[in-house]
Length: 165
Image (cartoon, rainbow, N blue to C red):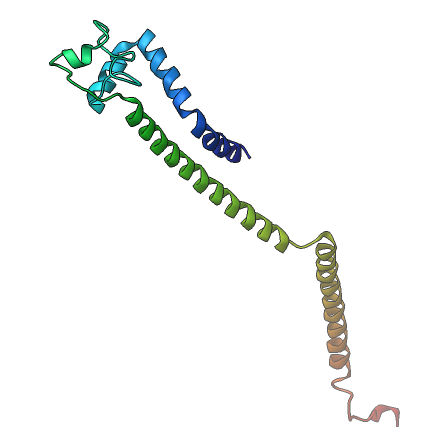
């Protein structure tokens, strides 16, 4: 369930992506400008919404245009937004894949659970097994008695009692 909620959260962030990126840019601008400078160099851009919007270095408003070390005339917002959405889609795909695996696990658990015998079936099998053993024991005893009686009567069958005459 948490995965479903996470998926909905990711989808609902589409409208607030710009707000999230703007707040993150401002926080980095205030607290750690080196991160923004590294980001600007790696993306080949300067500033957030425009080249003069919270650009690094902070020497002047148009330091990116004036500095030969930078010379970037493109703001970073569009590239950051595309990168954010690309990663968001990757996370959404990952979450969807995990949800699919969880659904398969749940379905297989239900299928296996339905194959388990009920309490009534277990009791019937238990009774059947013990009845079979009891009957087998009685059959064995009956068979032994028959064998004994045959052995006792073996010498007498067809013979006459000569001593009585």
